[in-house]
Length: 86
Image (tube, rainbow, N blue to C red; front, top):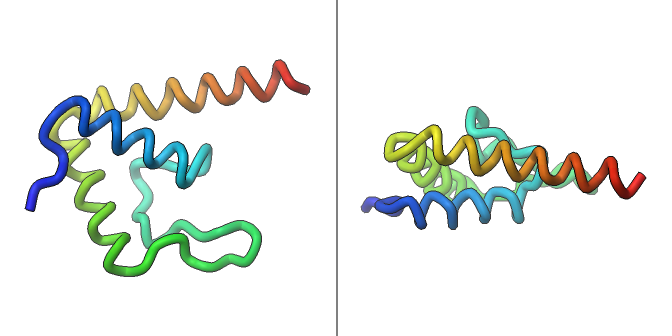
């Protein structure tokens, strides 16, 4: 099954990554490696991680530049917000 078919799908998946993982997200990392800071437990089950890895691969195959730009712009925006608030 293919999950990512349009630029809007890329945007929605990037938003999910930003909201669920935050600034620790990187497109070179497998989803099974993400853990919660508080208790070091995995954020995703093996099955969830496989599905998310597939979605990520589909994003990168469809338009890697767009996906990376969305993630990097979110990170830059967040860093600016953090520096303003400190």
